[in-house]
Image (cartoon, rainbow, N blue to C red):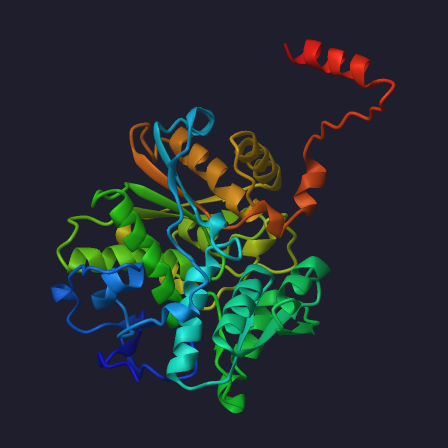
Length: 407
């Protein structure tokens, strides 16, 4: 067990649970959160790895570098003139999580999930995924010598399943009328089978996502952005980033916390719709279709916590139509960033919020680039193509015509 006397606490009612319980949510659906003792006295240490430097903030006394695939150390970049002009935001930054080992932000959480499996001396672990998390846990499980099960909905594309299989994971395709129903059903099997089934909003995975906040704290030399826009589905990513900044403030290392921007597709916006309507509970979505397949949780477990945090801390929330997602994807590509459609939602969302006056032009805004475009190639069919058919006999004339057209 962890040497720090770490516990879990339900995020709405404050009930306490042991750190080693196998379930990720309370019986009545509340998220669980890791509570690290004496966080107010936490300090940044020396160390090669981020988890060494911020060890005081983490539930594990140490992390074996042999479990890592080199996640993190992702660039925090100036967005550039095209994206700044498009959004109307002068200080726009991009946190490029697409360069993680399996090309998405999930890798930070997967490192801690396999660390927890090792802590509990488990030989098998499992997850539920539409793609990114299954790929990530399969890779990290292989690295850690664990057997991995990945439950996927029946509609999951074969290329995503192959990316899980290549690491030796067993993929279980589940036919269900709704992904959220499938997810809740499978999570409910954890205790019966003594199988740790990790989700996108589990407490240990969230601890891995905290590292993103710590990394940006270092990259900005202690400065805090005004807003961080996060494409949101299971809610763990936004929860982890916020928790990281909240704990930095509790430790006295920063004076304020950035406001989160919750971004969802309009066709599936259970969290954003609730916030916009002033409700305290998510509005479940079902039987929807969106190109942003990575954020398809229509009834996310623990989503009420995010809704209530948004009201409490003044977070912003915006949804994006299918047409807006496709256009944003194209604009990102023209700026040099090939992202998955779910990532593209954030660009138009902050543009809308800027147009509405909810974000000022001089605010510092970070967009989380959550996943690579290689994760979802179908959207390319919606984008204009520029391919010229040529031959050795016509290449001279073709090149002459192309160069004249582009001058």
